[in-house]
Image 1 (cartoon, rainbow, N blue to C red):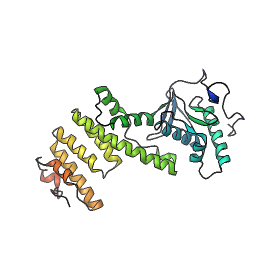
Image 2: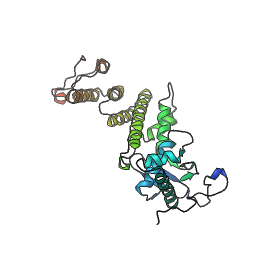
Image 3: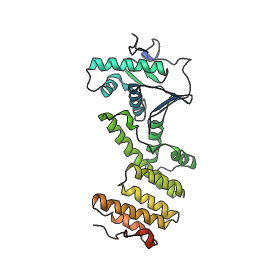
Image 4: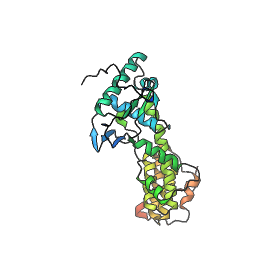
Length: 283
């Protein structure tokens, strides 16, 4: 397959101000995954794409999770993907990338002469995750059982695929989404504790800890979940593990608020604690 785009850049004339219109042969069931790994699938079948196509779709997926329209100006996309290339060359690279995408999977991208974005029928994991995360972080939001179940099934546990590169814009978006999902997982854990779903609360808190092993608030939620289900021994084990981590890696003690979580709980048996007795005061 040639890398050169045809003269019309894969665009068709007609309505919608030059944007590609839907064609009857566009397949249904297009889904795009960029969390944990990259995968574009159509009707459950994976579509093989080059690195440039993957990075372009990732850029559009991230944009879809941030703004309502989900579209990005062509100049912005070209500058992001080819930051060290001259403007004209970057624009030509983008035209070629769009054309190759349309050959591999027609209908995944909508493009005009001014901007481009994912087609409205494409299911995007980071869009779903961002919507759920912002819902969890809405002040005083109460979730019904169906909403809570949807939040539990949502992928708030993976970051943007690390194999897509380490460009500045990708690194910044990875960190932005990592922070969003950590806060969302903590909010989810708190709501699950309140709903007496202790096992699911433990999983959500552990997800936040995997994303940030030094995060005291996540460990606090994990301990609260164990205490709520009556697992005082496990709660104290996690307390000791976090104290050990802080002392060995940072040389600090947990906060007084964290220490107070275990007030009144049973002590850890000698064979389980070793020399890791928790301090009762912070420095």
